[in-house]
Length: 336
Image 1 (tube, rainbow, N blue to C red):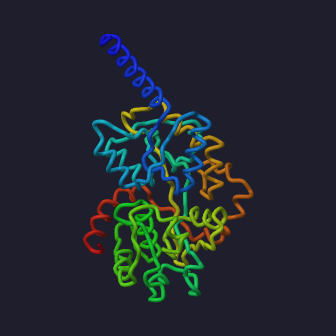
Image 2 (tube, rainbow, N blue to C red):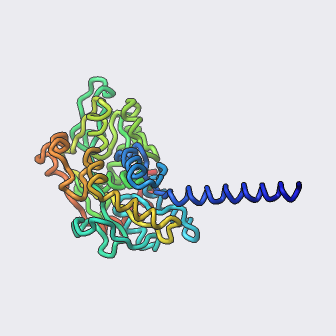
């Protein structure tokens, strides 16, 4: 009887092992794929429906994703990663990602991808002010970076940590460029952040979309797509403002992690993000997909006019990546 019980237990353990292996075969891990950001919730659901691959949501920001990949270099956990373009460039320098050219590779503009396939854009966003108009309680909607320093907005302005989150760093670059700085001189941005400290800003570490909708953060330095989502999908009284002094537009990119544990599944996930359906999801979430023909006329009507977007410019993303760590150190020293 003991021998029989042993066989039963062995059989059960084997079955559990096979079930676990089968489940793993239908999974992939994406770092920094937060359901509340850029409508990753819909994208992840579509990936599951179309490919059968389960990709859990992940609320890391770009900096946290890069740090985790570096810590796990010897035994990677993630298969794919989504982050701001400067983090993709840095991940390549740190040998944390591998080359893969997904389906529709040839349709990605040259400036939006690493020539070898280490990273490639899936969409881009324009940085500005996401404003919960109701939460202003009658105060005027700010129109410029300098407006945010006014005492009337004390305790009302939020931005993600410029030393960690990519959108925070983009905000610093945008403010710096708009106020006369360069990627060699972050003086104007650092001065702005020092002045902002007197206005008691809110500086969360993670995506703050829900906190804007609730009114906890009335004004958030964020991307156009999140403001449009709040307005058109969540029905919030939210306005998007491209500051009068100007701003920047940046691509968000994806990569296949070096030695990914579920590499084949990871490649399928990357393929889907550039598919017609995957790109349409980004467009319907008010992002500018890297395959421009995915934007429907209906989605286009919900963006601000082209005359407003004329104040959004590109920058040297390679140099932006090169100086990011130095900026983070300078910001931590002088502002935090």
